Image (cartoon, rainbow, N blue to C red; front, side, top):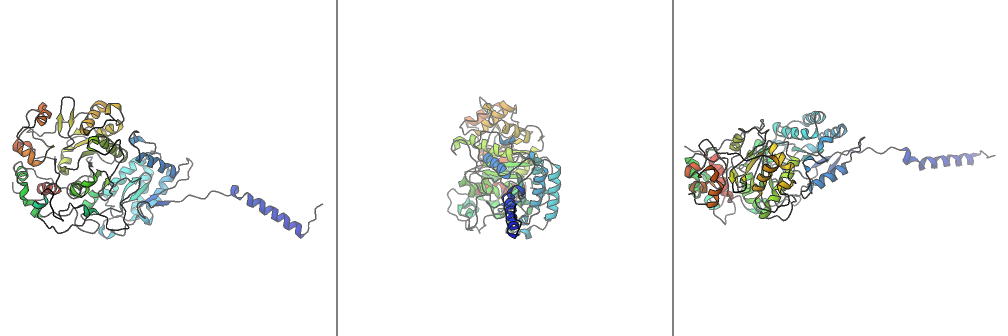
Length: 529
């Protein structure tokens, strides 16, 4: 018989305490997972939602899939990848709405410039309604429209990156505009020695040592940034944007032939509306380029015609989110003779991230000047819900195609079909060639049964142009290859008949001052025709 004295009771209590301590891990419940924030790009850049639900969704798994897809070399069709956001459940949406309501979404550095912004409660209310009623892919498109149509640029909400909204710390960036030390005529000279022609590489230097141009491996560019800046009318410092060019550029003597053509046709620019696009005519402008063009023609595009596109993105050899420009992985080396693989990587990326946000996709090079409102006015004559392939048609002995020099536009169904068949053997997925425009046309024809369109006006004058304005005007019909590419449509019209008043672009604008001149003269110079 056990003696039940004070010592015995203490011993029994000690045993019981040890038992409960040993089993506390099994008896306790797992801690709840809370919203966390990704600070790789900036201190308030990417809110992420961690999930704890019946399906066992896990953020780390999602991010691993997302990063793998972004780093892909181009052999899987990611347009319908497994992490396409159609599987978002209610608990994820609730956490996302909570993240939107966080104080992280207040951009205090430039809030004074955005008096028309909605309050955060209104933003959250809209987000909750969208997230609870629509699939995630529709939510992305609707949030894109919300950011544009309701002027949310002050809070910098612009895109839903998978399951979280992303703040754009580079929104409103603009290189400093210095007083010019040369005339525009001097700036148009090759290898000029002027410092302040708005084409100096130093203008793009990062002056703040704490700033970073690395947006992280999961970055999805803010393609509507320039359009929103145009609607705002100023940059982050409150300076007018796009930067004014001045009347002196209208009278540049070096452009007498160009001026003569623009006057005699005449080619007049359609004004860019200061209101968001509300029709099914939104266009994403996609430019292939390389780093050494960032400070020259890419900057000139950015400060002239790029904001007329509903979205703009440069695909380069270096990522710079201020432009915005992104470098993508591709097959083989980055060389001109490998342009097809570069364009394939562009198509795959855009097809994955932006296909539902735009109605048209306009692709061209970094020596292109476009008149985006005239382009949109012309594209509006077509049904964007049907497959259309629009540009300056050429035809050799083997294939008809739209030349990449003039840029070409694909409606969403046409572009979706192209993206869906990038790995189809009929689309030459392993080919190394500079003829990306021919490869695109072959893929569209063989895999999608889509052909080019004759884009001449009623008087057979061209709207899209493979050459510069001065060359088109001076061309005398001597280039055999050019005559051959146009043989099917009869002789190329010469002189002032070369170009339609509805012209939408010119090519070979390799000098940034010349690019600025053509755009400025067409749109802003007071002309009596």
